[in-house]
Length: 216
Image (cartoon, rainbow, N blue to C red; front, top):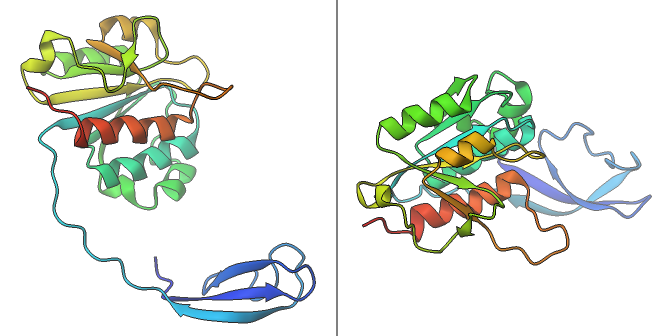
């Protein structure tokens, strides 16, 4: 981010209170009514401190099976970077960082997170399994266990390489891909919708696997 300072401004017409950064497209006009605003507070942005080096004992990669939203993919890139996910496998109709919306949402994370593209998620998953990765699908399914339940597949005691699989926002994970997985997990839900945005669900699952899970 190139912005080093900002103002809190108040619109004299509609009463909107909002932060104004140096590169705001409306200048000092109100972004809602284009009315005149006045500054009420000025601040310098403190530089973000460098995070201490951290690398999980678990090598976690993620396979995106036909995610259709470029915004979701970009957000997943950004979250993957923050959590330390090693690689994203973009499959089927999943947009890649060549898509402007992916780049806009990822905020540069596509440069720091390794990624690859495949037209066929099932073939990619089989290659990961051949390389010793335990395959875990995040999906509402009758076979699914709660995310924090023990990993029961024998494959999970053979190493520390996991591949988390996320499915299409509407149809979910490909049924043949689910059958290939060593484990299916779900996040317990309480609300009426009983679902989360795929990027939010990814962030919860990846954080747990990288910070709260042990594979031994």
